[in-house]
Image (tube, rainbow, N blue to C red; front, side, top):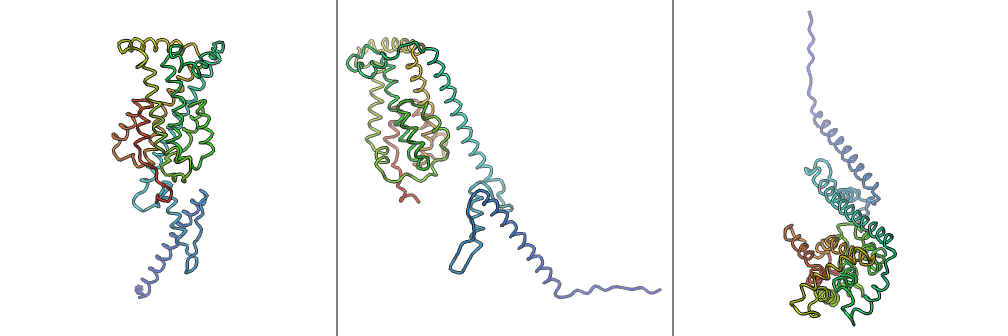
Length: 338
């Protein structure tokens, strides 16, 4: 019985063919991955087309730009050993911004609805006389009006300036909205500024500093900080009654003023709305302070120290922000920022 044996002959060129095929397939897969990355970036409206060099058209620039955009947006190429790392950080940051926006808008909406309802229910109360006293007669005759409320009312002309000094550096891309919101806030307070403060976007420390202008010089000046400090000191002095009454009666006067302020709060739409507005101005301040500290390099790696600075400003309304505005470092000019 014949048996046939087949001998497998190893051809010397087989290894070269195998290597060539493997390299070709890897190149095809790589190009497919690059094409997929650039398609994903183009969906986001970014131009990553080939760039022209002195040696002709280079496609590597397109792939590099695609990788940069994907990494900056929170994604990494598969296989680089950091899958999900940047994505997780970006997602956490986006969630934090969204949570802050929802919280600010929710509080602002509830407060606005409450004040509107209170004004409608107490429309018969005459606030004209109170407003006239606030604007003209209090300086000549302080005894005709509650000193605590005078301090609250006048502070509503200082709070918008504090917010403008902190928010202006992050507003170049939203200049019209910033101008309208801060301008109207001198009359309507946080009821006008709230939507801009909540929805302006973050982190605003990535926004280039504004160009040199009269407005930048005014809002960054020591004179503006000194004005805020002077108004804050005046508000505390008038509210406490120091200087207007003997020291042994200050505590009694202050208690009587608080009792009278509660009465006015429950009866007058003007007092009710301005008191709530003042509380909102105070409560929303950290949203502006944190961004301003980051833009000026004051937000360090120690979270406890960072929030201790913010808490100190919150603990002493008006005075705390005034001291911060006087001591914060100057904002760099666009030409100085790399």
